[in-house]
Image 1 (cartoon, rainbow, N blue to C red):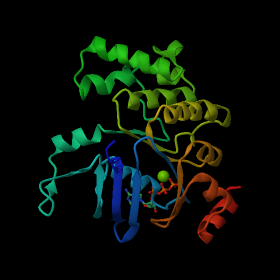
Image 2 (cartoon, helix red, strand yellow):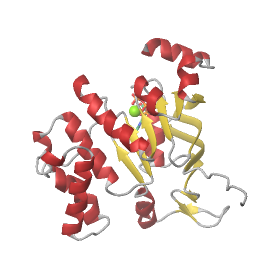
Image 3 (cartoon, helix red, strand yellow):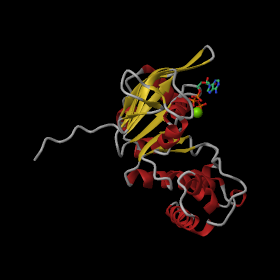
Image 4 (cartoon, helix red, strand yellow):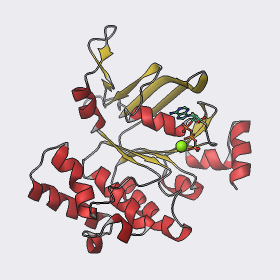
Length: 259
Ligand SMILES: Nc1ncnc2c1ncn2[C@@H]1O[C@H](COP(=O)(O)OP(=O)(O)OP(=O)(O)O)[C@@H](O)[C@H]1O
Ligand SMILES: [Mg+2]
């Protein structure tokens, strides 16, 4: 038997800094996630959770710090020490490795569920229509929407729309899924169906970074829970310790407000 390989993080973000105007929003965030891991990100409004996801998804650039996915520097090309911004063509490729689901579904209102899910396959991946359609329908079935593949967003409940959005991200075969408060816009009775799809995904081994207020979900599904506060991570540990024996005063205070 050989020596077991050291596991390499799928995502490795180091010392991320970001400011908007003169307001520092991220002040040195380190965040890594191993293949198959689920990390829940908690924290008060404005603490930098969404900004962190936007940097990982290359929707924005960090002022300072590095992000590696699968050992590759995001948004940069060239040898260490001589990196330069990657051309848009490379950035577009790198972005495909990461799927993102937003609070507000962001579906195309003029396309039915199948067309919404297949849009990335035909435009970005340039798959033939028929092939893309088959994959889209299969993915919609996987999220429990086999009976709704021809419906338009306006004909679907919020929970169903969010599952279409999840299917749309998954069909691109991402290595990492980012969720930004995926259930916050839903009526309470629709939250469960979306969380169940996410839990199945986690069980199947997807690597996930989830911003959420659903502490029960975080406790049950996450491997680690992270607390953001004012642009830094103040606590990071496995759920039991995080919720039952938090180390930082800030976490204790946050949990008092949540419960
Ligand atoms: N494009 C922007 N321009 C200016 N300020 C911004 C921009 N995006 C975010 N901010 C500010 O950065 C801070 C962090 O925002 P961010 O969206 O990351 O917080 P969050 O932790 O996701 O909060 P929430 O729980 O409310 O979603 C906030 O003060 C926000 O107002
Ligand atoms: Mg946010």
